Length: 385
Image (cartoon, rainbow, N blue to C red; front, side):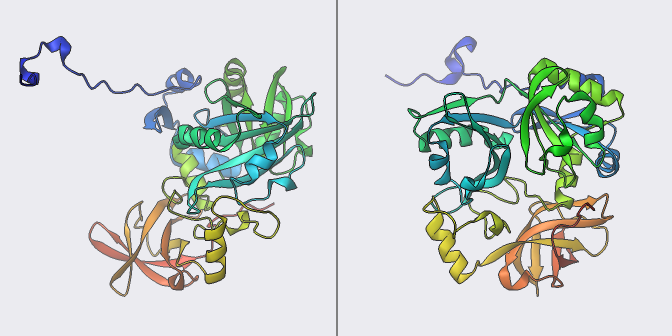
């Protein structure tokens, strides 16, 4: 008996490739009302821009902007030995954290490749003396991170909760962010230091506030229930805070030389190669996944580094463009843009370590032609404090 031919099957029996619908945050309808330009991003339908990328970028640099980042992954971990189990997953010494402090770090695989970059927040002990931790991870890696964490920790000892779709997360960023946010928050935000956080009262409702961000500016990331988040967005807009999309978020983070997972860092790059050596605390902690590789790299030196490039002219280097030295291909651009604040075309790229020193001249191939670029110190932009 032969296998049935698809051409002979009734139409209703044919497999249909139905595209998976994009997820939407609770703020999606507000974005539509504001005529935001939407795009697919990591399985979500998200705003690229509202009033324009440059205007939104400059609003964050000079005043205040608000981003909907509810698509990011949000995990809570509660138990008696959470710290001990997290310590072996990251190169950073999380035991340094006091309640109300946070650590930007990376999850590593056995080859010391970066599974994801994320922030762990230590919230202290609950009423029964158990440790309370929170993690915010990238939207594109939420499922991967969740699977990895649940495989690595003892779920009999740790209560792991995925709150990724049950909470709104807003980033209020810019030199005037606190001025706009404070009237809506009961607690004194001036007392919260960078990478500090608290559980507070926002518009009369409980919420989580962290003095963190992805723009190179001061500001807070605020996590609340969906209804409170919508009201908070509207309240901020009435005071002049500018709605911002993923486009400005990307140009802002690139000026600050903050890595984007999947482009500047991934499973094949180590934190030492990516310029994240400050996250690797070999002297103050014990064993962790990937430690032997990092010890070898620390001793021998890395073969390549993530560098900052400043194009000579306004030709824009984009992700994937090859980098040349003496007519030889030596690397690849990971991120690039025409930076609104810096006023020049900038990029990140991996090149061999001998070519990574500031002042080195390289070339980037753009549409078949090569254009000069200079290696410069990172970040490209640093806010005045």
